[in-house]
Length: 32
Image 1: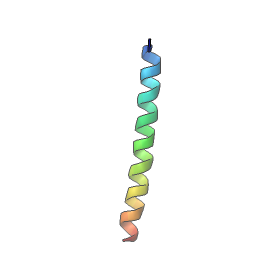
Image 2: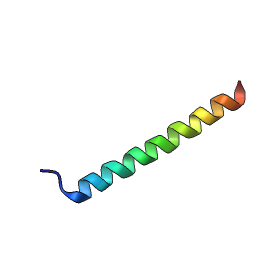
Image 3: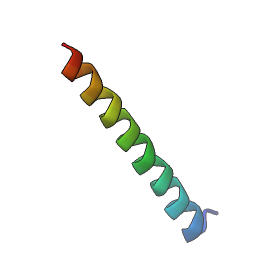
Image 4: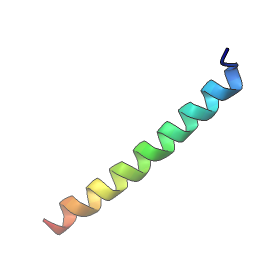
């Protein structure tokens, strides 16, 4: 069973990943 801390940690990882992807996406769009 997942505990709350695991869910929070996964959420934090997802958020970090989303931020990184958004950053890369922005850089690609600036080059175009």
